[in-house]
Image (tube, rainbow, N blue to C red; front, side, top):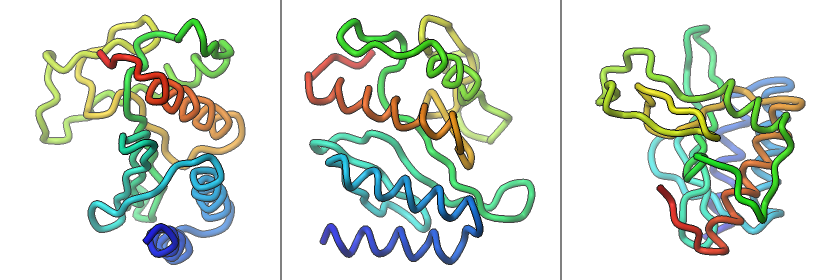
Length: 162
């Protein structure tokens, strides 16, 4: 079943993304599998990335404002602080803070009550997941991978989510 799920996401990436965006997305999928995570299809072009039966992040292939598909990476879990036993470089924290998932009037239930703390800073109107990346590359992709490792660390050590 794992190979089937991997093939589905790879096929979708190859059909909907092009050039460097496609290469980066396929590299990210390989990264998941190489690092003990699995990918589960939950809806058309929407996948949950799992580790030990918990969601690490969600991937969407979504047609955005530019009318072409983009890779959206929604980070799941508690990013309210840095774990003392899993230090993060300040550059990773800064990149994460630039990608806080503030609602842009999506029509959902993202109001002033939907506030979350992301690395010590409180944000209102958070739309679902606390952090969202669109077509990450370079230092941003490296930060995505570091945040994934942090999430895996919290799951593996059964750290409480807030």
